[in-house]
Length: 220
Image (cartoon, rainbow, N blue to C red; front, side, top):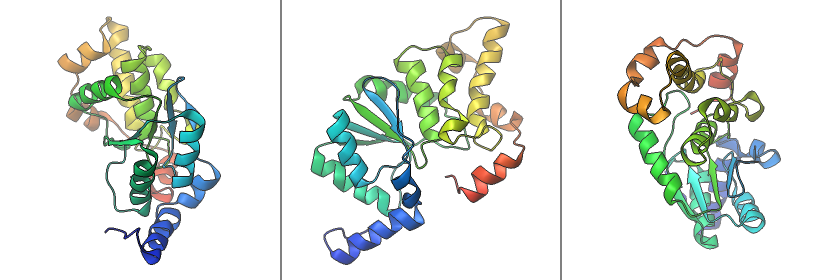
């Protein structure tokens, strides 16, 4: 589904889709915005007004969208806002209920190296995919250790490890457990030992937060 933003009705439909269908009314009150460094920020899906605000305040040159292209008005309005402000909008799809592949991580490392900064990364709620992206940004680009970087996957951002999104924590903690047995670099482990299918099969979800995150919040 597309939205004809050049018409009043098309723009209204996109606005309604963003706020009502894609839960933008929540993000209008709280956008889950945090700084990762002097030149990288994370948040939930920004509205055009918020994009303009972040561009003016932080000089944002690139937006890294972990949702990928989607049918909501939020996406079409974001594309338009970025075009108007001269911001590069880059898509890189991550998932909240499955860990990244080894190729995803290699590709994302290259993206971080080539981004034009200051940059802003986001998903829908700024919790799971943005949390995974922020964690990997710290590991791959800033050189932080995995244990420290894991702080980006935290309940204060709306990430619940006892939901299906907890598989993201499990992915990184699997590496930490392996590294504790005998030291191995994260990228070396990724390339030589990481088995995404085995990891998915091992992971088990549990707890009330699974219902909250997966059903009530309708995580993608």
